[in-house]
Length: 171
Image: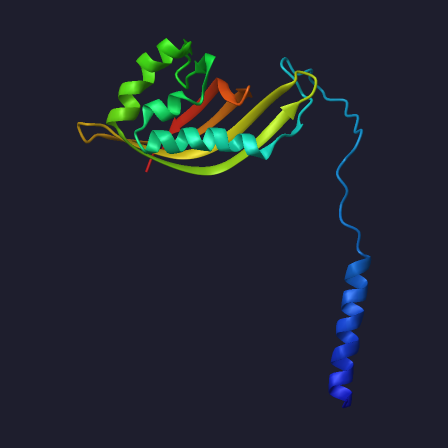
C-alpha cells in the first residue's frame, strides 16, 4: 500500500476506535427532584407502551374516513370527553349524540404531528398524547383549521378519557 492509502486507513481505524469508546447516555434512574410545586394529578410519569398510540391513531383514521362505527369501537363504555370549549360529554350515548353527525358528514383532514405514550405507575394509568393539525370542511363548504393537543387515557385497550386543547389556525 502506498503512503496515501495507509494514512487513510490509519485515520479511519483511529476514528472508529475513538468513537467506539464514547459511552451512550444512560437513562436517568431513581432521580429524585424537588419540584417547586406539587402536581395536583401526578408528576410521576415515564414512557409507556408505544402500541397504545395505535388506538388513538386508529381513532384519527376512522374520523378521517367518516367511519363513526369504527371510531365508536375504540371507546370504553365509561368514556368522558373534556372538549376544548370546556364542555364535558359522558358515556357512549352522549358521545354518539355529539360526534356521529360530525364524523359522518364533515370532510375531515387530520395530520398527526407528534404522539407519545406515557404511563404513571403511581396512578396505574396509560395515556397517549397527540398533537395534530386538523381541517374540517362542513356540508355548507365552510372550513375550520386548527391545531390540537389531545390526551387520551387508555383503559382495557379502549379510550376512556379525552382531554382536548385546541386553537384556530390564523393564516
